Length: 473
Image 1 (tube, rainbow, N blue to C red):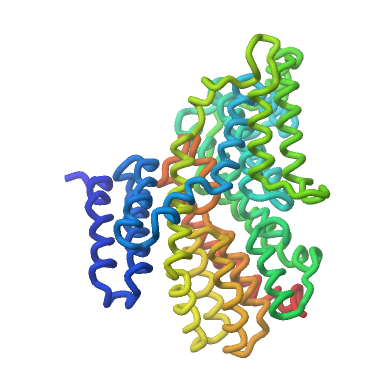
Image 2: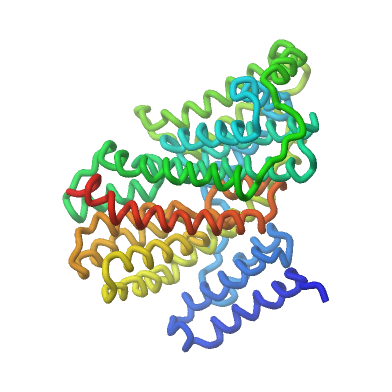
């Protein structure tokens, strides 16, 4: 009899909820946090097994959390209108315009003409560009900028039949996961690259009265970024998603395609201008005399596209074009944010913090392993902002309790909470590439699990050996 994961998951989700919720002795939690833990187990099980369509499962927190007392209705639903959800909406809208006017094809052919001849070089080039951008802007904004380009490359190469079916699937999956994972890995290198890194700097300043400069962190973080990028490239191209080319992707082919496309149309130039302007604001917005959030920038760019006239009639975007928007992905991300909000409001995050405070009975190296592993898998479900904000202050007390300098434990919190590669809800880049329908959740889980394992090893070794040398005050 063939194993049916969907049917098993359909029953397993509510069963896990019932065990965690109706048997309080298992966790010794109060009603509200116990309800949140049970609902999270239910929703995560259905996400993983796809017992229901993933967007449909993402609606469960709206009624399960209030019904079980895990969170009030406002907390459960407001998360679906979180600013980052609208940032995605704006970014995906810009991507729709890029595709509508064929700009994505021109960008893709330009990249191929520069990078040249092999699928591996294309994956490497896109990965390096993504990681570099993510050092300066949020991983979400980076993924939204790179995703249309990656999709265009996949589309062009598929249409020209350079690979057989299996290799084409491997190429598309490898390229998209390179975008997702590079966007997270690149942010590890700088204090502006991720919220947890900024939390490290903030706690060092407020609790330890120590100023951590950009260069202080960069000398330490860039080593981790480089090592993880090398491992990621080798893993994707040589192990997990090998590509057997049936033809040569030459720069001549790309130049010929660009020639056939002809000069850029007015619409292409206008969309490109908006794309560059929004990308520039994402990168340099922090230097403006007034505050601009990534969401404000994203929605501003999307709105412009509905305002700018087209020479072919109508506007650059008409509302009918929005049928191509990944509405289901917005629900998926909203569901993850709803659970994260319930973690905070119910006090479940404090429970996790108390568990980690018991680590003081182990030696330092073992503590690093346990802490890194725990945080990394926590952030697969919770937002890295929630995890880092909860655990960064605790890490200072934990370090004092075991008699070590706090910066190593704090670095573990910052780094591990940014490395989540297994689930679409784990990070904005994961969610973005999952929206393409080129990747199944099992692909992301399998590849992400091994990247999680590698990240644990790299982070622990870096903190244990390099942090005392490069990031010690």
